[in-house]
Length: 67
Image (cartoon, rainbow, N blue to C red; front, top):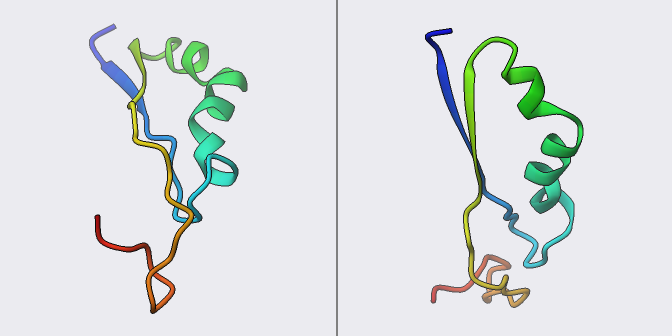
């Protein structure tokens, strides 16, 4: 096998919580993504990026505020 894949999860979303799409990286791993990829490439699972706690506060226009 010559192909190499490094899997990196980014568990974040724009709603300011850890639910919803932020659970995507772990859901993909739980569904067997890594073993399936390993059938076609050498896979390294680097885990999820450490992110700061989400901010559920919105700015005046409904967007996330600048930090």
